[in-house]
Structure formats: C-alpha cells, structure tokens
Image (cartoon, rainbow, N blue to C red; front, side, top):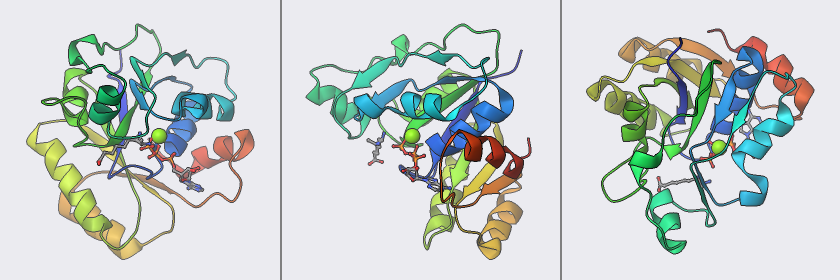
Length: 203
Ligand SMILES: Nc1ncnc2c1ncn2[C@@H]1O[C@H](COP(=O)(O)OP(=O)(O)OP(=O)(O)O)[C@@H](O)[C@H]1O
Ligand SMILES: C[C@H](N)[C@H](N)CCCCCC(=O)O
Ligand SMILES: [Mg+2]
C-alpha cells in the first residue's frame, strides 16, 4: 500500500490546491484537507471537487473546519477550540491518499504542533510546491532543510507559475530533490485545463 502523499508549499497561496487538483485527477487518488481555516463556503475540498472528473476519487471530510482565515492555531482559538493532533487520523481508504496541508510547513496547529509534525505523524511522503519569485530560493531551501532534518521523505518538488530555470536548477542541484515538473500560469482553471495540466507533472 502506498504511503500518503502530502502536498505542502513554501508558503500559503502558493498553489497547493491547484496542484492537488491536477495530481488528484492524474493519479485518481483520494483527497483530504485535514485542517481548513476560513473559506468554509468555498473550501479547498470544494475547489478540488469542482475541478476533478474521475469517479474514483473520494473526498474525505476535514478533521477541523475553522471559520476564520488565519493560522489554524489562531482560527481555532477564535472558534473557541484547540486543535488536538491526536484526533487528526488519516481516513481509511484502499486508494492512494493525497493530503493538502494548511499554508507552509511551519504553520502552527496548536501551541506545540506544526504542519510539519502532522506530516511525520501521518508517515506521508512530501510533494513540495514552490513558485519562482524573488525570495523563493530561500523559502524553498528552508522548507527542504526542515523536511530533511526530520527525515521526512521528499518525493519531489513542483514549481508553480512562471519558469525560472536558474532558480530551479540551483534548488535541484543544491538539494538533490527530484524535479517533478512545472505548472504554468493557467489562464482558465476548469475540469479540462486541470486534466490537461497532468502532462506537466511526471511522477
Ligand atoms: N498555475 C496557476 N495558474 C493560475 N492560477 C493559479 C495557479 N496557481 C495558483 N493559482 C491561483 O492562485 C490562488 C492561490 O492558489 P491555491 O489556492 O492553490 O493556493 P494554496 O497554496 O492552496 O493556498 P492555501 O494555503 O490557502 O491552501 C488561487 O486563486 C489559484 O487559483
Ligand atoms: C488561511 C489560509 N488560506 C491558509 N489556509 C492558512 C495560512 C496560515 C499561514 C500562517 C503563517 O505562516 O503565518
Ligand atoms: Mg489550498
């Protein structure tokens, strides 16, 4: 049985949900967003569900649905609760499971447990979503350093958005992490463009 795939990013708003939709359609795997903070009427799960065509994918319910769009530890406090990491248990499925994180790796779920700790707890392999912008080399190398320091397997990195070969080459050569592909800016995001975008990723 495959280990779960955990899609994380060098930060929030980097394209994890978009890349997750492409991967879910390409792999016909299940999707799970354990912690959703804010946007409950347009959640990541709902976004992916709207973009996926295959009938095999099961969309599992979040462990935590928080009303405010902040760091999960803060959103939970605003909702009068505290996230208990013991309750975040991977859903049972015979299919491959793709898990989308919240924000980047060092995002707090409570006062002692971060997204990166959840990856370890779920024994998942990481697909890191990066983007090419001034400062992204630092953010990407820091993310990879954090994963390696916790002996978390990195399946590879997907660059999202405009190409920057010098940035991508430096990151791949310095870290030896596998380049899984690059998703260009999609002028239109719908079922067809998400299905077609599968060709940009090789894994
Ligand atoms: N390659 C792309 N082409 C066009 N739009 C994109 C692309 N990647 C991301 N976007 C857009 O950028 C925004 C942020 O992307 P996305 O929601 O996937 O980020 P995220 O990392 O999942 O954020 P969060 O941390 O909130 O989960 C969305 O509106 C998304 O449609
Ligand atoms: C609310 C947003 N859409 C994400 N789901 C959560 C981002 C948390 C970022 C925390 C931080 O790194 O400062
Ligand atoms: Mg998302």
